[in-house]
Image 1 (cartoon, rainbow, N blue to C red):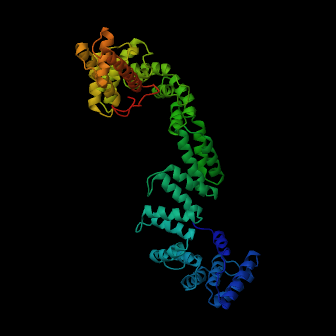
Image 2: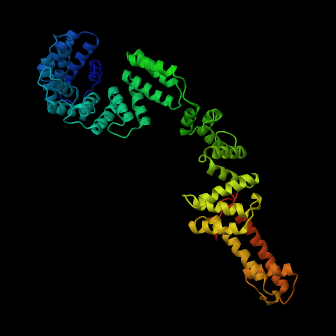
Image 3: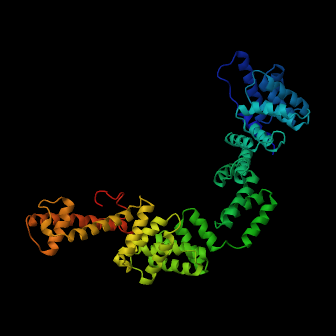
Length: 497
């Protein structure tokens, strides 16, 4: 797409006077301004006469402006060859500081109408104009690096288009958006592409309307809204792109995407509340995707009110129906319910954790879960040997899994109490240390015995027992998922644990 000359005139008419000029420069500048004023008022004959006077005096701006008139045939006979000569003289003039003459000279060598086509010379002039941040020259360079086989470089073309877009070239903004959307010269990035395409569309580029319609249609087919696609296709159709009408008709008559697609679209955009109604409808149609993510939403309370009992039942059914989806989630949800599920489901959950314990990245957590369900009476699966076995496996597998190691510590203290209780109370030291006082006090209190230092030991042991009981209870709470203290013990010997 070639630049229309109205854009060139707009840029040219906006030129300003350099801060410091000699008297002759001031006179020439005044003449240029007079010529542009005449052109703006429609008096092209006067404008041509003034620009001719400037060109005869060797003024590069006058040469450029007169060249534009000869190129378009305004006020003078149309003469592309003379226009080229004037533009080239202007571009090569040492005092020329504006990009238009270099741009038009480069385009003449590129088109090959008035001079033989020469890609190297064309690029050299276009590069001069581009160095002055002239968007149209950058756009043409981008097209050359995109399409000319001898210099093709998509990455370089994209970089030039992006620069041209910054320098007010809507056509370049469209090309940059198209390349980024399709992954040409860069990894595909639809979000970034949309930024460029909207710039082009805001400037009235019809191809940008159509491509925005395509992207919106793809979004719709993935579960997004239809309104944006319809809007852009209608604008493209009004701009003369006939294919937009057929795409719009096809899209509107094929029906909406599936509930699962519409839910997935919203979940991917972190809109769980918007996704939830579609998940419910999808599950109502017995679609695994909808049922699974509806259960996840209920278990986590994202997008709807939390309901772990319902989530557990849904995961249980998925696991039974598919033997794959929902089994691990069923086990974890049952564990989080803290024994509120029925005995059969608790047993099934523990069995799943046992299977996971032997394989997978989460095996340490699974082993600990078996231990916890075997130790916590609320699950109805009390088995201290099983709890000890799986706690030790989990603690050894991952030392940072402090919950399992805390559980082992509890068992070790329990074993020490039992061993200590087998000894005679009268053989205990009169002034025991903390741990001895704990065990001694427990034994004395249990056996109702007294002896030398017995009262002191009992008092000291009772204080120690109370402290250790609180410490152990806190540790137990920190091990139970769902507890407000869960995860509060970063290491086995942390204070308060």
